[in-house]
Every structure is written in C-alpha cells, then in structure tokens.
Amino acid sequence: MSDLADNAIDAARQENVARILEAAERLFRHYGYAKTNVADIARELDMSPANIYRFFASKTEIHQALCSRMLGASYQQALEIARLPLSASERLRRYGLGQHKLTVETMLDEQKVHEMVVVAIERDWHVIEKHISRLDDLLAGIIREGIEAGEFADVDPAVAARCFGASLVTLCHPQIVAQCLAKENRATPDELVEFAIRALKK
Image 1 (tube, one colour):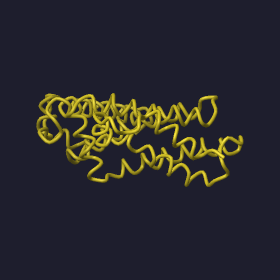
Image 2 (cartoon, helix red, strand yellow):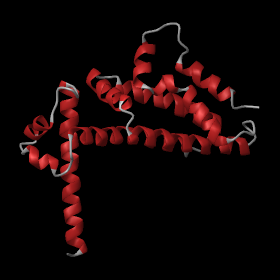
Image 3 (cartoon, rainbow, N blue to C red):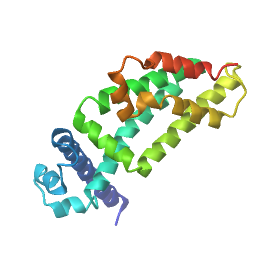
Image 4 (cartoon, one colour):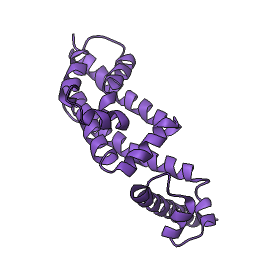
C-alpha cells in the first residue's frame, strides 16, 4: 500500500475518532456521563455501536480520550505561558491564575462536565498522572530559570515544582475548586499564588 493510501486511511480514522469524541462530549454534557452509553453515542452519529467499537473498546476508553483532550488544552495554556519573555515569578503567577480560570470555565461551568472530570480523577487514570507529570516538568523549567537569574533560592527545581504545584491544588482540582468558590474563609487565588511564589524566593 502506498504512503498516499496510508495517509488517507489515517486521516479517515482521525476524522471518525474526532466525530465520536465530539458526539460523546455533547451527550456527556447534556445527559451526564453515567446516563450516556455507547448505543446513545452511536445513535447520535447515526451509526451502529459496532462501528464505535472499531475505534474505542468501551465508553471508558472514550472518556479517557476526552479527558486527555481537555487536559491537553490545560497543558497548552501552561506551555504558552512558560515561553513568555517574562520573569519566572510573573510566569508562575500567570500559570496559577490561568489554571484556576480554565478550571472554573471549562470544568465547573456545567455540572455534567464536572461529573466527567470527577470520575476520571477518582479512577486514578494514567491520563491524569501523565498530565500532572508534564505540568511539573514545565514548572521545574520555569523555576530553574528563576534560580539561574537569581530570582529564586538555589533549590532542587524538580522538588520545588512538585511542591509549587501541590500548593495550588485548590485552584485546579475541580472538586476542591467547586467547594471553595462558595466559601468566604478561603485564601483567594491571588493570595495563594503570591504565597507560593514567595516561598521560592531568597
């Protein structure tokens, strides 16, 4: 088979995968993850469930792919911030506040989306772990540059990144964010980010 034919097959597969994910996300948002099954997704696309199973082995696999896509948007935002020609402190500030804003806008805006994210976190999927590791690596790079510029104390960037990320968990964990939004006795996002950045300084 020629490369051209292979590329055409790959493109057709990617198009079908994208259509399935878009239909699944629409249904998950509207009816909720628990109330949606593969047959519903197939009906939405006017195809048979067997055709869905050609691309995904189960509803869980579809859900994992959706979560990976959502987390990919979060990582892309963080990557763009990490590349800005700004001080390390300012990039960390924008990272923390940006992650919080993204969580509120994309994961809490609709209760059905919140449910989908919560299920993924509770099941401890590898896509969540991979996302956390990628963010930690990105933060370590920013912190390393801050150390080299004399902005931060001379510490292990990897350890500092994990601690920085953990200290901001209330800004990006959807369940905790949802709970804290209605509480008046919680640190604000700005207060928490500033506190975490000060901890890195000399």
